[in-house]
Image (cartoon, rainbow, N blue to C red; front, side, top):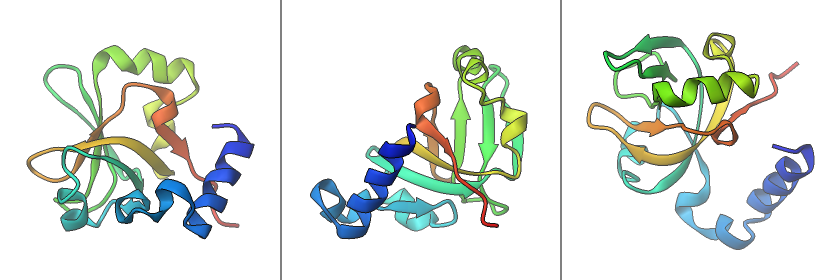
Length: 128
């Protein structure tokens, strides 16, 4: 995301302008399982540290954003992996990084957001 857009998003969120007035528009921490479960089927911003990677039988990749079962996870279908890598978002490079993920919340064993495009993942700056 261009630096200017990130700044405008932060300003809008801080001032609760436009869509940021809506309770569901704020970003949610990956560990807010109950709040995220209430957003199933809706678009959400989910923030968390990528703790580990997992692989599904269909070649699907999982980014686990929390240490506990029930914390949010991100899933990347095999067909989208190359697109992410070409954008500089190698899954292994995301481990132990804090990310902000945008997408529709789904999942049955905890909140799950499917990522199919690089613009859905923003690597957050680490505090100094």
